[in-house]
Length: 151
Image (cartoon, rainbow, N blue to C red):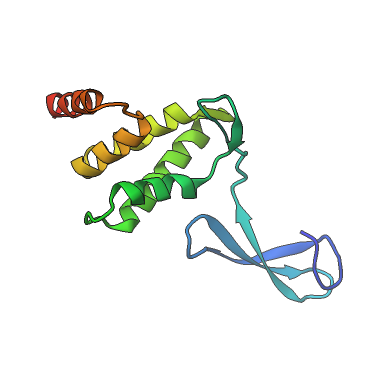
């Protein structure tokens, strides 16, 4: 690690702690040459994920889009936003763990619905109605019937 003060490459770790977000490690280092201390953060390198839309276009994965879509499904419903953030993180980690760099928006929607179903049935149906792009009341009723049969 290069010292920000003198530029020397040699330093030693004096202290290591998990950061508040739990995603990185905070390290206090001491330069072997000038003896000054500095802080570094170590994080896991993640590869970018590309979402393949239904029309074939590609765009970078954006966890905020997933979170916002779930918040819309919970409109006027009681929900702990921490639960939605946890679900979003689970989905993102699941995708990262597959080591695939592309995921279809259909698969992403299925992952969200799978996690919404046990949390709130109304939010699940709301999300499903947008995800499946129901064209009429019959297709909407089929989804509700399917949900009730699985319950």
